[in-house]
Length: 161
Image 1 (tube, rainbow, N blue to C red):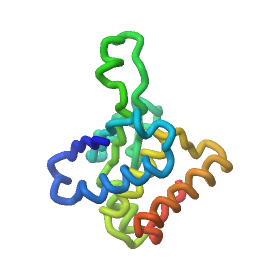
Image 2 (image 1 turned 45 degrees about the vertical axis):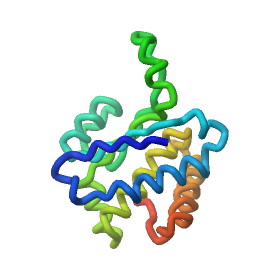
Image 3 (image 1 turned 135 degrees about the vertical axis):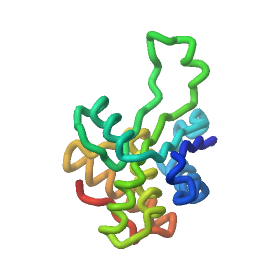
């Protein structure tokens, strides 16, 4: 599994890619055994609040930054020639570092650990999890807890939003 990182310049010294890579590999191995062999890449973008706000407004109609967004790689009928090129790319996880940092401070842990939690959260979305109902939210939060415990970060819990 190849993990592509795009970390905006102001955050490059604040985010360690190796723990993120470990978390993504572990999550994929734990929850997507059926298609793990067909998935060969994912992209993680660490960006600022302005970029995140633009994406959130464009794709969710919410004109405010959020902590994490996931974009599944789906075939585009307008560009069928890209389907083969992008086959195996699970999707993109976009994380707003300033939001992650604020959530980490409020929760009493490091921004790096919050970014790991958000990467796990985003990857679970790409694997089909959602929190659109209370039942789905409980399943997703339980899965996040399980992964974080297995990564030795069981004390890191998602914010309730």
